[in-house]
Length: 209
Image (cartoon, rainbow, N blue to C red):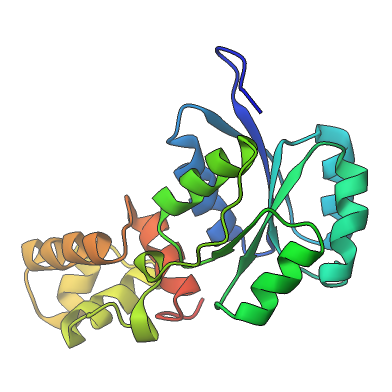
């Protein structure tokens, strides 16, 4: 599908974790060719928004409440008209990828994938292709991303909402040292800001919210 000049790919997000949705929306809209037109937190709302908003690509978490598993995909595709669906999941499994494709999905991504992989997948699927390459590039082996013990401490406190000054006082280190740890964490987890950092850490199982 060729995008008309000046138009944007309309994306619907279906996921019930607000922090993840906020981070993914920001990541996609950093690409000037994409716009998130809606976000649904359950199956019923996904169907409603798919009909009402006519998104071109739907990023769908199969575990949202009330969806009904892969068997719901054909119904969603009928309801959404020309929409293409990319399934999001917390882990890679060959059987699940095959099931997603069999029921009509055009892509399968780990929720822990780097933002650029979501951008590429949306663009590829919109253009008529597929994106089933669940690559280790976007996933962290073992979840730890090579974090040091101190980085994990800082990450936990960032997720609790503490400022750099508060983290410094809690850990007995300088504020500048905390900022250095935050910068390294954002680099390792491919995050652009604190919200994106916590989202990325959460989907990798590094922090609890």
